[in-house]
Image (cartoon, rainbow over all chains, first blue to last red; front, side, top):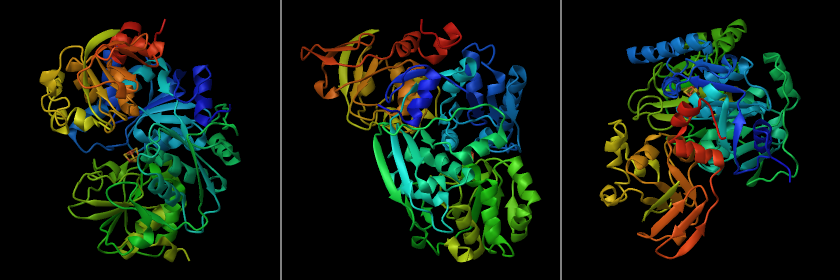
Length: 418
Length: 166
Ligand code: SF4
């Protein structure tokens, strides 16, 4: 019997024949924590009497969730992280460097076929480049930092085969929202998702990250894709590390195979307050919005900013609406400056904030007021997610947000792409 | 790891808010205090009914919901020896092993409220003394038992400095 991508990577890293539901101890290739989770991991590391990390060049901490620090208490936690990084020689990405999930692949820490943990639920993002990467808690992170190992329950896999070609103006964000709406927020709990088919292969690597990023929103612990020429080319541009991708066997055993044809897919929007509350944009078009957000680990990459700039070029953000842009990383920001993309967005009326999580998780940088509607490119719209549980968050692509801030209401972006 | 005690039965999908309500979990870090409120919303007298070594016996998807480690810690501190369920939510499962709370997947339909059980976690044997029958279970992998018997991941690392299953 053949194996899924998850079974293959966990077999390789545990040195045993790993099958779904087996429990294995596996070697980690990279370990990451962010500023919300690292301080607790540092505490656990100390309780465990840790003396050193397994390999400081394969441990990173990222200050991205509240960066720069908005509060004295947070500043103390950041100081702890800096102190830990200095003492143990691990990699520290300080304020302004970017969102952890953008940085891990961008800085070349993640390659196809590797096993990565991060103390953040969206660590599943790197599945787009064929890595088994998953979110863990702070105690696991501490154990991973110390030993370079962690135990895993090998997940079963749901395979999503996406046929057809996305129509013009229909982006990968709509595809993943559509899948989540279909399978629901806990439809893949415990499991890995594999995304394949011609519609996936047609996407750029950046657009693929958006899909794997949101695997957790269907409950999956990993959102895996096969590595193709585009993946190889992308990875080689970001690292000189050798790597060996894995492919699913044709006779691999799946929990379920779901097939879709997306040739007629429309732009999708997730309504408040759950990510699986998904409808075609036509059903919410006209809803007044007070704030738009472009950024986050889901849709803050150069390609995303370009799409937004294309729509916002020589146009203006509606006077009753504001637009916040948080580039996913310093690299993205620099590239966007060089291309003139950022200038276009700023001229249109965008407020650009520090590369990082920005307003995504409500720590700073744009907390909405009571009763306000926000349209965001993020991955979560839970009540209170952006720091106010009386606000309403809609999720769309960068194109939806760009179009909506021009009109001041939720808008089908295809009107601006003609 | 052998335990003997009484079964306290619950249904499917017991989430972490039922295990320990959000009303308490942010208020105190005192686990003994948290333990007093364990399962309170499902059974207000639960804590006073439990004797040392007793079991929580539940249906499928036990521990779904939030990823906080307070849920298994509260159960442990209520002197429950192990949780038996048809299945567990993933993060809860991880948190149990990491905090040192024994858990066993089995067909819990074969256990009634109040049954007296004898459980050998290492051998994978559940003996229902009241009904005089054995319930087959898959024993936990050896290294998981090791983490559990050391008292969780922090204690395991404190003792061995790394994962150590020899
Ligand atoms: S951008 Fe948002 S979802 Fe992504 S890591 Fe930051 S807070 Fe989490």
